[in-house]
Amino acid sequence: MTSAAFDFASLFPAGLPQPAAKWTGLAKYSFVGGNNDADEVPVDGLTAAVDAVLRREGRLLATYNLANGPQGYRPLREFIATKLQRDAAIACKAEDILIVSGSLQALDLVNHALLARGDTVIVEQETYQGSLNRLTRLGVNVIGIPLDGEGMRMDLLASALADLKSRGIRPKYIYTIPTVQNPTGSIMPEARRAELLRLSAAYGVPIFEDDCYADLIWDGSRPPAIYAMAKNGGVIHIGSFSKSIAPALRVGFVVAPWEVMSRMLALKTDAGSGALEQMVLAEYCAPHFATHVPQLRRALRKKLDTLMEALNEQFGTTAEFEEPKGGIFLWVKLPDNVDTLKLYQSALAAGVSINPGPEWSTDHGHSKSRLRLCFASPSHQQIREGVAVLADVCRREFGVPVRIANVEKART
Image (tube, rainbow, N blue to C red):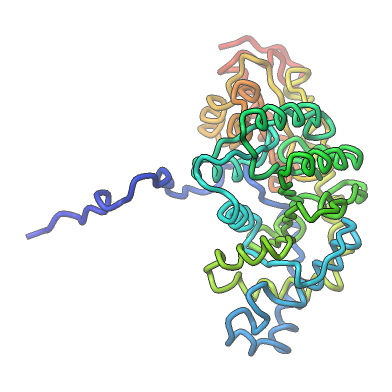
C-alpha cells in the first residue's frame, strides 16, 4: 500500500513569493546577473590568504563572530574603513561598519529597519532589480525618478518631493546608486550629489546610497560618496566585495549612524555572516586590493569594448547605448516595436540569456524595448557569438535589425 504524498501547499501562508524554478544551468551565452570575470578571480592570492589566516587565527572559528562581536571581523572592518577614506572620502571607524552577507542582506536590513507596508520610497526609475523586488514584496509604494547621463534628475526629484509633501506623505528614503549606476552605468557628479543632500535635508528624507560598483570606474577616479558629503548623518551607505573580488563570497558592508545600525543588528538574526570569508578577505585585501582592482578594471574594459563592437556589427544603429563609465553592465535600447520580455524568452530558447528592461525599471512602458547585458562573465568569443545569435533571434521575432553583420537579410 502506498500513501499519498504529503500536501505542504495547504500549509503555506498567504503572501509568499511565487515558488522558485529549478536550476537548469547557465545559458550557453549568459549576459545576465552580476557574475564577474572568472579569469580575474585572484585564486592564488586567496589560496595563500586562506592558509595564512587559518594557521594564525583558525581557532577563532570556535567562537561565533570570531570573538569580534556582531558587527564582523575587526581586521576586515578596519580595512574597509581605510579603503573608504582613501577612495570615497568617507571618514569612519570600524565601529561604524557592519559586515553583512552581500549587499542583498544590507538591503533587507535597511528595509526591515525603516519600512512598513504602505510606506513610500523614492528610487531611480531604472534601478537594481533586487531592490525593486524587495520593495514590491513589502507592499511599499515606489516612486521612480527618471535619469539622465548624470544620474537621478534633481528637478524631477524636487517636484516629486513637493507633491508628496502636499499630500502629507513623507518618503522613508531616497535610494540611489550614484557611482556607476545599475543598469545605466552613469556617475552622479559632485554638484548633483550636493543638491540631493540639500533636498534630503529640506524634506527630512534620508538617502540610501548603494555604492556596490564604485571600485570599477575605468579611470579609477570618482566623486566623494554622498555619505562623505553629508553634514547631518542622514545617509546610509552600503558596499560589497562581489564586484571587486568575487560574488560567491557573499560579503558586503553597511556604514550607518548607530541609531540605525543598532536596529539592524537586532534584525540580523543569522549569528554572523560567513566568518571564513571575512578572514580571507581581510588577509588578502590589505596587501593586494589596490593592485588587483586596476587589473580587473582593465580586463572588464576590454570586454565592454568587445560587446560594443559586436552590437555595432550585428545591430548597427538599431541598438542604442551610452558607453558606461565603469561596471559590468551595458544598458541597450532597441527599436520601440521590440518587446524585450518576449525577446528574452525566444533568445533563451536559442541559448542566449538577457535581462529584459522592464525588470529593472519602475516604468515598464519606458523600458519595454530596453535590455541589460552583463559583459563580465562571458569570454570575448562568447560575447561575439552570443550577440550574433541575439541579433538573429531579434530579426526573426521583430524584423530588426534588417542588416546583420553588414549582410542584408529578409524577414522570414
